[in-house]
Image 1 (cartoon, rainbow over the protein chains, first blue to last red):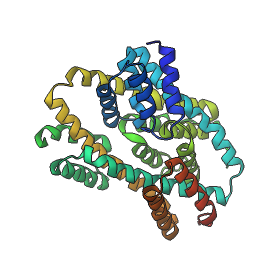
Image 2: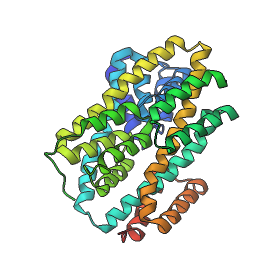
Image 3: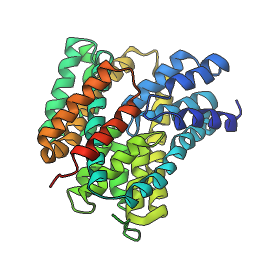
Amino acid sequence: MNVLVLYLLLLRATALSFSGFASVPVIREALVVQRGVLTDEQLNSAIAISQASPGPLGLYVVVLGYFVAGIPGALAGALALATPAILAIPIARAVRRHQDSQVRGACAAIVIASCVLMATTSVRLAPEAAPSLPFALLAGLGFIALASGRVPPVVVIIASACLGPFLA
Amino acid sequence: MPTSAGRSIPLGSFIRASSLHVGAAAAASALRRDLVETGRLSSTAFDEAYAVARLTPGTNLLAMYTLLGERFAGWKGALCALAVGTVIPSVVAVALGTAYVTYAQHSLANQAMQGARAGALAVFVWAIVRLVRPQLEQHRRRGILLAIATLVMTLALPIPQFVVLLIAGGIGAAFLRDAP
């Protein structure tokens, strides 16, 4: 597949979504349904990998690009992921021009609301992430380890990966 | 609040956040610890970057990196932070993608991935706690009411998350503006 076309298709999906996985339906339609350059299994795999990789959850776009067109495809995916972020600067400067207590209050409220949205997302993801009691306990132990302040997140994930085969 | 162009870019913080943390919540919480709690950036500036990033199309985390980098060194800082936030995770993801394809049929790899997903869920939930705690410390009662209202909107109304955030922003502008 032409890498430029791949970039534009991925960019269309990332630029029209407002969270990591919100672009999945658009990408599936473009690459799996319409062009057949990707399978649903590859799409699910890319999503799983992005959940285990550091960085944004939307990183699955880079993995998809790699599956479709190797390294050039991965570069197209990375650029498609990064391009919309440039828009944040003019938006932020407009916000700063009107910096006052109302804007600060709005920002604080958005942080609170987004945490609630993330919490609801975590509830939806939980059955797949912890499909059985042992894995749920593993997640719980991971949370306790993080709350102790002594264990970094990457250690929790690596340790959980090592324990996975014993719990399956 | 004006930008602080000309300050050194905390590349180490961006490198650590983009290479050690899964998802926006965990990375944001790590950046807050590195930048705000050490005094390099004000809490207000961080919250603004986080909030605007949530309203920007595309990946929230990369938008936040861009805005935080811009705070330190204008466009140069923005592009450096965005490059770090994109390149490092992309290299890791492609490496993992290659390994996953190679060992996809191996049951041990699948079981390890399942364990990793359980760990990632713990990291995600803890990051939410770290992000919301400073806000609730500052706006305890109204913050909790806002959280409940957001939950009701999300569960009971068929409106996109982006609209929920806009509504929350409007509520915050009206009721959270008198914070100390």
